[in-house]
Amino acid sequence: MSGGGGIYEPDVFYELCDAYGILVWQDFMFACSMYPGDEAFLNNVRQEAIDNVKRLRNYACIALWCGNNEMDAAWAEYIEDAGWGWKQRYNDQQRKEIWQAYDQIFHYLLPDVVNKYDELTAYWPSSPMQALTADEAQHASFETIKSGDIHYWDVWHGQKPLQAYKDNVGRFMSEYGFQSFPEEKTVLTYAEEKDFALDSSVMLHHQKNGAGNHLIKTYMDMYYKEPKDFTSFLSLSHALQAKAIRSAIEAHRLHKPYCMGTLYWQMNDCWPVASWSSMDYYGRWKALQYDVRDRFKQTILIVDQGDHQLSFYAVSDELLDQAAELTIQALDFNGNMVMEKSLNVTIQKNTSIKIHQEKLTFLQGRLEDFVIFAQLKVGEKVIDSVEHLLVKPKDVACIDPQIEVEYVENGIELSCSHLAINVWLEADQDGFFSTNNFCLIPGKKKRVLFTESIIGNDDFAKYSLPDKVVVKSMYNFI
Image (cartoon, rainbow, N blue to C red; front, side, top):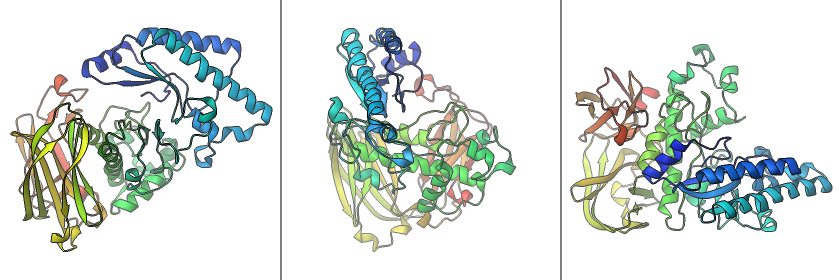
């Protein structure tokens, strides 16, 4: 999904999407503004649409053509913080003319082009939107949408807790996001250490959401301990962003098949900056990129915590049922087992299903002292595993985990003496680890490989052993 982002991607993008089975929500290049409706402009729009529809229509990956990003909602809704409520700025005659131009482009011209040149692909006038008719579209509301697609921003702009993701799930979640800063190496390309403050002119210039820097700080105070310095703040902002979007993706996938789509904003940046991206301007992976790769696997295990119990869900995009083994362990932070269960379960095809529920009474209320480790195996293959903290990270005692690193072929093997959370690996060269931003539990070794691939995909992998790997965890950030 491009979000009306200014370019139609080159052919190689669509070729790769075809090859890897990735469906594309393709926006026309209109976003967050209203456009003229004079004849010359309309003719220009029509020809641009014809050229691009004809160029892209034969790619199997094109799933939907979308007229614009957020323009219908911005015209219909009054949201002061978002700068929306455009029609309130104009008199009746101006509003009539502006809407007529909008109506002509997005309800007549563009659907006519799609119907004529790519009739088998769906057209959607605006995102987010509930209804297809112009009259219905003007009355769409984020709070009332029960069909169509939703952009959900009450987590972030609305400062609601991450729990709100679970309580606001639509049929297709086509935009939501959460910011972080880039890593220190990238920040140092545009700032000096004397600029390392949220309100410095350099940091504010490299932040295009007016309240963005302090929103990161506000949410960090909700979930994490105070970072010891600004460099640690940068790192914790990665962990916070990953935690937020992971919560959203799991909430959406857990509600399958009611919710059948989740698209986070955004993947990359056009300049080095604090933003919603999961990769920075230089292509360096934030913690979020690792987490979304993990949470978009074909089959995942979700641990959903209620007031007094844990629910374990298996979510599968596979088209066949899978016989699996679910293992659940409760451990203290020294790795001592206080509970273990192993269950045979069926992962039903193409849906989300609760496979087990466990009351937390056996922990006698001492949730801050334990971690849950859950694992799904199909045959001898582990298809997913999850480490689940029972309290917020800021409520976890942070003791030196004494992480030990052993170099193995193409990577490292990690072990620890005490629970380590938000373990973060850095190499002395650009590349990607097989996993990052994870929990490390005493007694459970974790092997991590490194690749120099620019894509981070096993099909393109060139494995290597970095000369130096730096291992940090929450203990190093506070």
